[in-house]
Image (cartoon, rainbow, N blue to C red):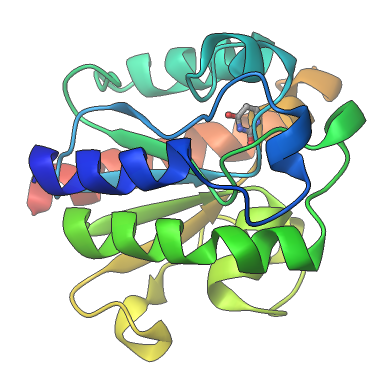
Length: 195
Ligand code: URA
């Protein structure tokens, strides 16, 4: 698995398929371990990810690690992490359709190699990329989608809030985004343990 992933990474390192290749500092390919049980797909690299070449290392990433840790999961032991696109868009704007299209082959290869039992889609951009226009994140988060309907056999897919959204919504009251995330991560852990 690692060798196959490295081949794709080597392709990405040379990629000039879209203009983001001109402004990037680093390709942000993946982090965590290639675990076929659990994969998380985020949006796009931000400032710190671009600087370090590692996904989810800024503030949002630190919160993501805490969310996983709250149920005993960690990126070093349990989860493979990547993004829909591998280069940072200027000013952290949403990736353009043509940027997502150009990068899609790399994401598809990553998914095919990991062949995850559970795929988490972190935020609207990831949901839209994998499931299409099925509704905003507040409507679809916490629900299981059958991957076989989207070309991913034997994969259960769950959209979850993006940690940057949680950073902007600090309440922990019942029904708040943070509270809902806590319900979702517990459900994810139950399913992880069951598999
Ligand atoms: N947000 C994302 O979606 N991905 C990252 O890697 C960092 C922040």
